[in-house]
Amino acid sequence: MQTDEGYTHALGNRHVQMIAIGGAIGVGLFLGAGGRLAAAGPALVLSYAAAGLAAFFVMRALGELVLYRPTSGSFVDYADEFVGPWAAFASGWMYWINWAFTGIAELTAIATYVHRWAPHFPTWATALLALGLVLVVNLLSVRLFGELEFWFALLKVLAIITFLVVGLCAVLFSVGAATPANLVAHGGFFPNGFGVVLMSLQAVVFAYASIELVGITAGETANPRQVMPKAINGVIWRIAVFYVGSIILLAMVLPWTAYSADNSPFVTFFASLGVPWAADAMNLIVITAAMSSCNSGLYSTGRILRSMATKGEAPAFAARLSGRHVPIGGILLTAAVFLGGVALFYFVPERAFNIATAVASLGVITTWGTLVYCQLRLRRRGHVSPFRMPGTPYSNWATLAFLALVVLLMPFADADQRVAFFLLPLLAAGIVIGWKITAARRRAHRAGPSATP
Image (cartoon, rainbow, N blue to C red; front, side, top):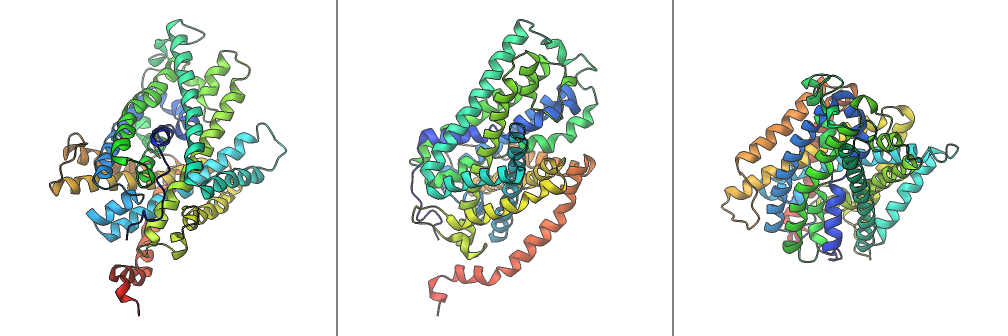
């Protein structure tokens, strides 16, 4: 069944380019970099560079697959074709788990940061309002989603560019504590050893989450074979500049000891310059980044769940398409989990964000691994693409080895990562049980209309 049937090609080059940019600038950078700098020191840049290189190969693998066959089912459809139905089922549900927990983390972040301005307003009400906004946007039309995400992404880009310009000037003119010497002062480049850098990989991989979203937009993009290569190629310089460049500058503009997990490192820097409105401005940026993530999560999981539901691998309700050509069933299913997951904030408020992002990273790793392996199988078929992934097959196996390393390191890291790692057997068991439960529906789907009495 063609899972793109019923969709409109409402996303243009402007939307896809900004969705790709927004995917490459996540809340992991805005919210998570401060705590990681405080733990690993300047050497954190090595984690961002290593994960960035893996992300580049993942995106080039995605590009080759998209040009082979654009589809809103993305890696789920590719896993079905190149590995088997079981791989599509597993990768699809792991991706959904990724976004379910990411959405919980982002709603928690929104409630926490709005609390700065309205301490007496209930946090649950803030999360509910935020969810309601992105839900309405996603249910109305894909064009409205694209417009909102365009402006969300633009705001994030402007914030990062502002920091890069101001930070570079601070280093060049030795403003305040800014100096390249901060990279090796205060305990050296590895103040807490190389092991801490390795243990930060999971959080850094989560920071790159959502870059694959641009592939899901392919089924609703006009001229995807022209638009997609440009969007995907742009990821590598955004990784180099926005992520690696930002971490290097953060390590130079202030000693690494100035950062903490409680504050955005960008807010910490601007506050050190004596800019009175910096904290509020960056607070708005962080909220916007979290809203953007929730917005993208509803968009992507709605399409992925519909792709799976049409094959009998998800609840039939998820296959429903509204009169506005929006997969309303899948979007509402994810929104319900977003809403229920806010309870995590009440049970472990100080750990909710880290636990949610650790579990979400398992879905990110599964998605990336699926894309890289599917591209390898595509190339083995003898397919020649005008948009080739560099270094195949060696880059494929190196990327897969890196992703496996990230997972294997999790039980040796902090308590939140251990929680996520030891959930793996439960997730695997749930997927196996779900695979068996949906067996009858899958057989009926593959038999086609002729199987219907």
